[in-house]
Structure formats: structure tokens, C-alpha cells
Length: 180
Image (cartoon, rainbow, N blue to C red; front, side, top):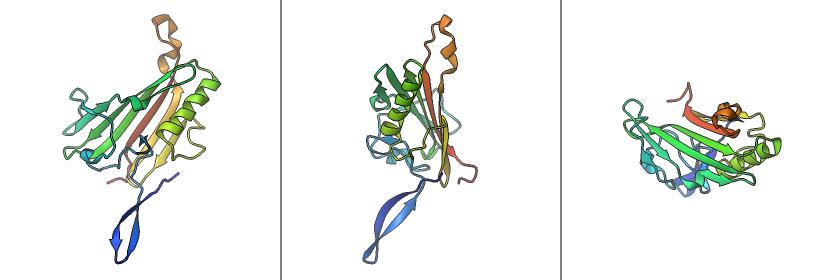
């Protein structure tokens, strides 16, 4: 599935000319796409509070982390808590975005569907109706791919050691093989 977003740029003569920009993320933050792949981190228009992550720094680039309340949601039977990481190159251009959500609810078909509905509505509102039906999904753009995975947490079966069964959601946006 390919996703194209049309942004209107300046004028050409007397008529506005649309620019097709398919490197805009499907991940939304407060009603707008969060990032454009390969754009400078400083150009994020509406963004959560990020903190520089010096512990997980990759190569010459920079890493940022946010625990913004927007990435958390209350479910009818529990909570969804998300963390977002952005990795940039040495020019601070976005190279990878990863998100992790722990969904602390009982593991039933009903809570699974409620969590998927919340993820679609709050974080990925422009995705298709089929999004996450197979629990694993991919959206391909010009220069990057977004991968999504919704699954029972691997530690969910270890109740004897204090782990409570829960769902997890993983988001990974990274350069595609044919990317820049």
C-alpha cells in the first residue's frame, strides 16, 4: 500500500501547483503528521517535548526520546503508554523513528480490538480500514517504510516473575532499500 499526501506549495504563474510529498509520516501528533522523513529535526512543527538521548546514540547522529502524554491513552480496562525515539544523522535530518506502546489490559479479543481502534484513531488516523487487521502491517513511501506490529508481549506468559499479561504495539519508520 502506498500513501501520498498532497501539500500545496507556492504559486507557479497565477495558479497554485500541488506538490506530491509521500515522505510524510502516517504517525500523527495532535491532528497533524509528526514528521517528514529526512527533514531536519528542528523543522518539526507541532512536536512533543523531546530530550536528547545520549545513552542510545547511534554513530555520528543524535537520538531523541519523548514520553509525551499524547502517546498514552486510557482504555476501558487499562492504559496504553507510549514512548517515541527519533534518530537523526549528524545534520539532524530524521533517519529513523521508533515507537513502543505497552497496553496494560486483559488479553482478550475485545481489549485487543479496543486497543487497535485507539491506535488507529489517535495515532494513525489516515490509515485504511484494513490497517492492523493482520497484526503486522507495512506502509511504503518514496524513501522510507513504516512497519507496525501489534502482539502479545513476549514476557506476558511469565506471571510467576511479576509480569502481567499485556498487548504491545511497535512502530518503526526507517529508510527503505531504494531510499536516498
